[in-house]
Length: 485
Image (cartoon, rainbow, N blue to C red; front, side, top):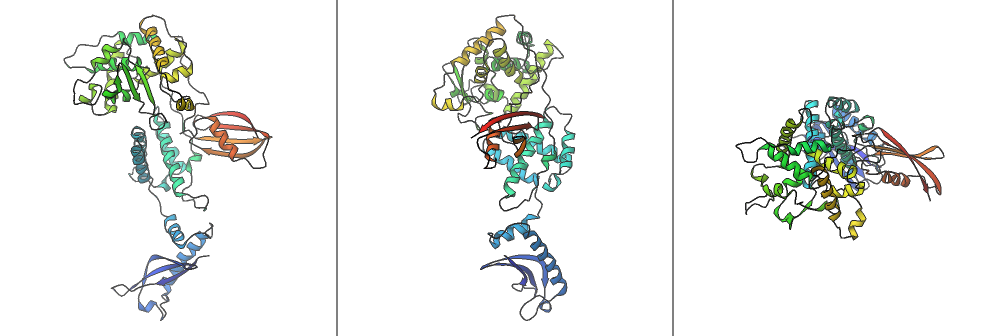
């Protein structure tokens, strides 16, 4: 039990005594300075406070401290921890400042591209709030729903921005709240917020006939070296003929990554989150080499494989210029058709699976997705199956006139879970709900069920447990069952 008492300590040069609240617990003593002061007339001979106004105000403050301490268990706390809790608990925190620190952490950990989404999300929220310093207290469910409504006309931002801000808020809850000690400085407003799904991009995969028309266009003559139209078409060809290689991996490629006709790279998007750092090897097809060699850097002093760095400073500006060139090519094919560089990656995958008979695992392997994590720990990976599949895709597009068989459909597969998706899951035994969770951070259904099993009451053994799992962000629900031993 901690005891509080109003007291003074030393007299200042102006003859006044600042008033403190003394916290005593056993032999531990801590002080909190108040905003009040007294003079000699406000003290008795033992330095006890007699000033009626000051005594009344300090009593009100101490009473509020007692009420606050009675709501939590503090028997194991030191006086310093108690003082810190009381003085900081009611202080509003800056969400803007916390988000900027979160962004800095992402950059330091190598997730610079991801950090930009968080930065853009915060900038949009601050513009909506008409302030550059949003406080946590401002982030109510009502405010968040209004902000998300303001994003309704966007295609991807209406999902991407709220998900980013929710992740920041989740990190803040972990930092500032302590469930074991009963400290809840931040309440979660996101439980009453529905994040809409991004619009499904149109024509994500380009049909075979449209690909042939695109690559058959002869760019307009220009007085410039490597004009945008030519660069856009050539980079699209490089990406498509190298298993859908991403723009950032093309732009950031260095000379030592290209050895004996084989391009070695770590995928920028996933190299910080995968144990193999997203490493892959792709042989440059003979069909592509003239285009590939055209952009090789000739400067001995340059570490970069391609000469794009001589004109552009970042991968973002590179992507923007490439997409402008691609848009100019499409204008010659079909003025109503739109597809960016990333669509060529989707097209490679679709053609590999639908037209070349590749399995989904083979497509994932060629795209350098994370598969067979444990096998990669023990096996020396052979990349030639991806090279063979890549040659089949090239052969289908450039050496046949067959049309694509696929029909574009919206992907509503429940099992496709992102770690940023908000998941609500419940476990049932004989129709009775026994535990539930709502959280982010899961990437598959098994992880969710494993988490729920750890929360089952100890008495539940050797029985069948039913699970109802809802992907809140996608508004999809699926049921599962497991036998718990």
